[in-house]
Amino acid sequence: MATTKATSELRLGLGGFLRAWREQLSPGDVGLPNTARRRAKGLRREEVAALSGVSVAWYTWLEQGRVDTSRQVLDAVARALRLDDAAHRHALALGGFVSTAEEPHTAYDPNLRAMLDGWPDSPALLLGPALDILAWNPAYAALGPDPADIPEERRNLLLLLVEDARQQRVLPDWEPIAIDLYRHLRTRADRRPGDEGFRRLTDRLRSARPDLDAWWACRSIGDFASRTVEIASRHDGTSHPYGMTLLLTPQPQDTAILVLTPHRPARTPEPTDPPSPDAPPSGVPRP
Image (cartoon, rainbow, N blue to C red; front, side, top):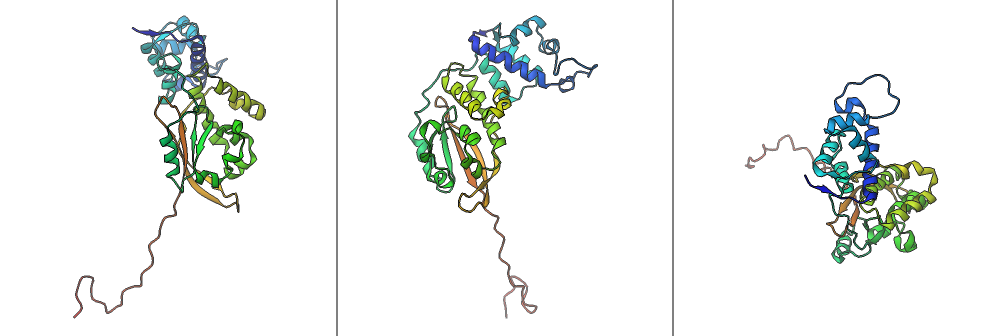
């Protein structure tokens, strides 16, 4: 049974992630009977250990980041904790079963920029692994605020969402988007424990919005889900619906494209005059 040697930082990240997930579950979530009142929230370690087929001591060490694990055992723990697909992939990466090799963050395929420019009516951003804005198309610049008017060191989508009032006016319902983007970010950050870019961004987020510290301390992860958002015109304030989608590019670039697709109003058929009472049935030639 092969065991991958994860770094101490990855092991600690895996342990914290499993513990946070365990604390969110109740016995009923995993098919166990609800017993008397519990002193601590969530499942007990011994319950997860029994469901996973490992000893309580070993599972405790796993949460403490003291042991490496095999893919087979980590899969069993994932099943016991009812991890969804995104969380399961994240746990495997933290366990050392996915490459964490770093790639340059600023370089990107020029064809991606050409793709953005090919969407004249759909505002789009090209984002780096830490959600830095690498490129944008004219449609996004027209939507506002134009990234060209923002200092390069502040061109980060998540940072702009939480601290830039102009961005918040354009996207009034920005909070759930920012939360989901941060979960998306954590999915990648935990796989790159030595990457200073992620750490610097989290420090900047804490500094910019200390009132949202519960967000920055949260360990939940997940893939960004497509949704419909209301975009307010910066000219007259009227709102228009857009579909928001985050497209992930193939690794090793680890970039993403955020695209806003305008919703077209459904076309209603033009009314037609009712047929004359003395008109022949359809398909019957007139005499």
